[in-house]
Image (cartoon, rainbow, N blue to C red; front, top):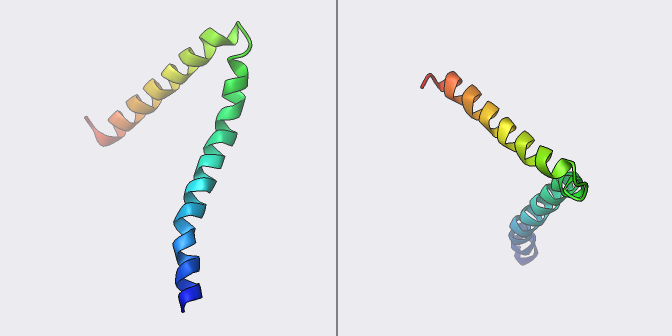
Length: 64
Protein backbone atom coordinates (compact mmCIF):
# COMPACT_ATOMS: atom_id res chain seq x y z
CA UNK A 1 0.00 0.00 0.00
CA UNK A 2 2.88 2.33 0.75
CA UNK A 3 4.25 1.72 -2.75
CA UNK A 4 0.86 2.59 -4.24
CA UNK A 5 0.63 5.90 -2.37
CA UNK A 6 4.19 6.72 -3.36
CA UNK A 7 3.35 6.18 -7.04
CA UNK A 8 0.17 8.26 -6.76
CA UNK A 9 2.10 11.14 -5.19
CA UNK A 10 4.44 11.21 -8.23
CA UNK A 11 1.68 11.93 -10.75
CA UNK A 12 1.37 15.70 -10.05
CA UNK A 13 5.12 16.15 -10.60
CA UNK A 14 4.94 14.13 -13.81
CA UNK A 15 1.95 16.15 -15.03
CA UNK A 16 3.62 19.50 -14.30
CA UNK A 17 6.92 18.52 -15.92
CA UNK A 18 5.11 17.12 -18.97
CA UNK A 19 3.06 20.31 -19.30
CA UNK A 20 6.16 22.52 -19.04
CA UNK A 21 7.92 20.39 -21.66
CA UNK A 22 4.95 20.64 -24.00
CA UNK A 23 4.83 24.43 -23.62
CA UNK A 24 8.55 24.69 -24.33
CA UNK A 25 8.25 22.53 -27.44
CA UNK A 26 5.33 24.62 -28.71
CA UNK A 27 7.07 27.96 -28.07
CA UNK A 28 10.47 27.02 -29.54
CA UNK A 29 9.54 27.84 -33.19
CA UNK A 30 8.32 31.29 -32.10
CA UNK A 31 11.57 31.89 -30.24
CA UNK A 32 13.49 30.95 -33.38
CA UNK A 33 11.42 33.43 -35.42
CA UNK A 34 12.61 36.27 -33.17
CA UNK A 35 16.16 35.62 -34.35
CA UNK A 36 15.21 36.79 -37.87
CA UNK A 37 14.99 40.60 -38.02
CA UNK A 38 12.01 40.93 -40.36
CA UNK A 39 9.90 38.60 -38.20
CA UNK A 40 10.53 40.53 -34.97
CA UNK A 41 7.72 42.90 -35.91
CA UNK A 42 5.43 40.36 -37.58
CA UNK A 43 5.30 37.83 -34.74
CA UNK A 44 3.96 40.23 -32.06
CA UNK A 45 1.44 41.64 -34.56
CA UNK A 46 0.28 38.12 -35.40
CA UNK A 47 -0.02 37.18 -31.72
CA UNK A 48 -2.00 40.33 -30.88
CA UNK A 49 -4.27 39.79 -33.90
CA UNK A 50 -4.84 36.16 -32.94
CA UNK A 51 -5.72 37.06 -29.33
CA UNK A 52 -8.06 39.84 -30.52
CA UNK A 53 -9.77 37.43 -32.93
CA UNK A 54 -10.28 34.82 -30.19
CA UNK A 55 -11.55 37.56 -27.84
CA UNK A 56 -14.12 38.76 -30.40
CA UNK A 57 -15.28 35.21 -31.19
CA UNK A 58 -15.74 34.33 -27.51
CA UNK A 59 -17.45 37.65 -26.81
CA UNK A 60 -19.94 37.03 -29.63
CA UNK A 61 -20.53 33.44 -28.57
CA UNK A 62 -21.38 34.52 -25.04
CA UNK A 63 -23.59 37.32 -26.36
CA UNK A 64 -21.99 40.30 -24.67
